[in-house]
Length: 370
Image (cartoon, rainbow, N blue to C red):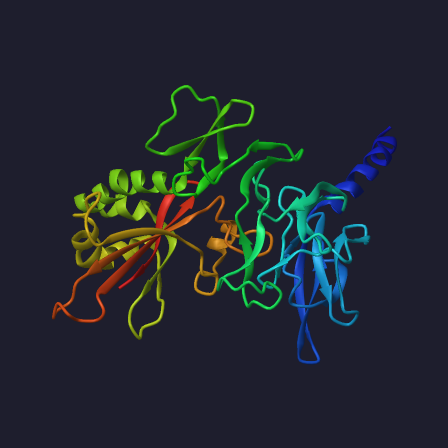
């Protein structure tokens, strides 16, 4: 009986192994770096033959690859099938990365983009000027825009930075249905919305931390606004803890790996305990303990994770499968304090930066620049 059970389970186990992600590895050959992929057991499934454009560190179902030897760009599936040989989407010299089983492709004849699914099938046609990856089954897309140059030149064939102007930003679902048809005019707050926080027809949304959009069908879609959420946490949780000077409490609000930039001293890294012990009384208390909402000289803006400085394993969960900052789920906010210097007509003011990242446990301070 147990042999029959084992035989029945073998196909399932084989499928599970094929469905498990493969990991990128690199080799040096003839002065160039080539990339291939290994499975979870370390077995080489694809030899190192792709060039630097192949940016997927994790291969789940479909990825864009580039082979210099064959001068080919295409989408590759786990079973080895190649699709979209003339439709690979490239933006800012980078391929798109699979997100929730979908990846962008470009129809070069129409100059429009759509989405392929994990099997390489076009599930959303190329009718959009531009689109962002799917998150929580939602994607922002631009439609009805016209090509334009950043320098406002009329010659869109020869401009240095080609983009789009006009059109409508819409919110799509995975069935290519437009849920919100004009994000340009909707009150999207800071524009940093948490797509994973969607609530439909919430009767009592917290306006201090959320934004509500009107859907095409009359529903109300409420999302957490990351910047609003961060400011509430900063002034209601972090600043009071610093003001009280409770070392243990402040340490708990710091990330496990902190870096401090000092002029000509590089970026030394600290644990939360050593960081707070060193800087609570000299920097954190005097600078942040007295902060008030709306205070002059305080600016807060969204930022990206510098993976060249923050390269430890602690930061890996905050990256996409292509090794880029997963800002849609783990946003970063940089708070800049500006101090006038003497004399008053000096050309440069003194600035200090305090940078926070949203983790699964809430926002945490992870960088300071003095």
